Image 1: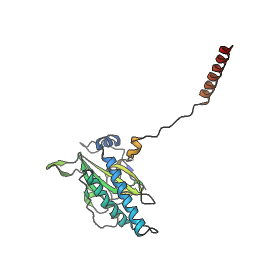
Image 2: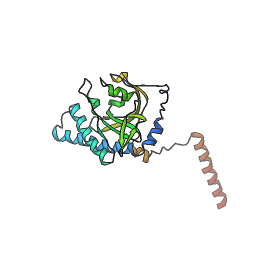
Image 3: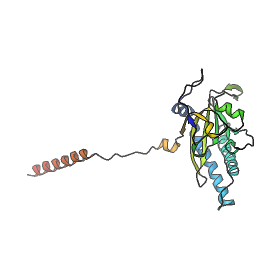
Length: 228
């Protein structure tokens, strides 16, 4: 099951930037998210190891611990994050989220197994968010209006580490995950990978090797001639 990507034009007057443009506009936010959420996952794993090392944690408990420490980490870095409002519905777990604004972007951090956005359940507020309805918020005492709604999805790996983060731009919300539509949804690169990209060495082709061998052989002939 995957969220469908929308190969369509946005609503009149609504400009949807690309994934690459948004990542550039977010500046340090992806690095802060990874640092805070990896720290939160470590707290969950530590709790599991100390309290019930041979058991899987209840999904609601692990998500709540994760959210608590994620909020603390984000606030330490100066991001005014807050607990996302939710109702106890049939699909409550993904709504144990975090919400914050950054440079007119309204960002919600949600649990999305394997990078699949959660459904909105019966929440009209979340459907409006997924439909790119703007929100008003205060920044330094001044009223601001968001221009773009984004979701950051996270998930645990088997050992309660942070498996990955995904950044998405929602288009349409629905009750269940398969009702959700996205303009785009991409894995968010880890800052360590961005800072230290892997260098790939390409082996010479056969004709290049033959040329190298001939050059070495020619060099040996020249040395023999010089010795004579």
